[in-house]
Image (cartoon, rainbow, N blue to C red; front, side):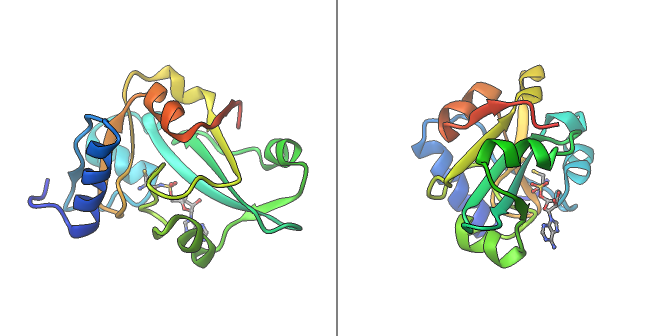
Amino acid sequence: MREPLNATALKFQGQLELMGLKGKVVEFEETTRTAADAAAAIGCEVGAIVKSLIFRTEDSGQAVVVYTSGSNRVDVAKIETLVNEPIGKAYAEFVREVTGYAIGGVPPFGFEPLPFTFLDEDLNRFEEIWAAAGTPNAVFPLTPQDLLNHTKARLVKVA
Ligand code: 5CA
């Protein structure tokens, strides 16, 4: 663990406090860029890591975020049915444009809500889940209910 927090992680910690969330940002020396990295650093199950995956609708260019359990792969066809359009994985630049964060550090909130927001129901299997806190070395804990409340996501089976 690293102290003090990097400026971006520190700013995100401030946002959590403003939102009334009690989770503390934890920053690691090692990378938490992927769900597997994050689970190894934290010492939790990969399934308890929240992947904030950004897609883009191919015709209308709208952002889609799917908060996915770290052990699941999104079934793209299911999401396409829900948004009624083909979707593609967003490029790094689009992710930065719509969330303000770089891939590997995208937190689940702290940006303008995106047009389509889905939450993997499998995250409900865990009492505590962990998500990125703005950088590829920082994460924070929260409950699936907190994630639902603060993202107003539609709960779906994504895998
Ligand atoms: N910090 C971790 C755990 S919270 C994290 O942010 N995981 S993540 O899954 O939300 O973000 C990494 C994801 O970004 C990868 O699963 C992958 O789907 C996506 N990604 C990685 N590189 C690229 C890229 N070059 N273009 C588009 N997406 C990418």
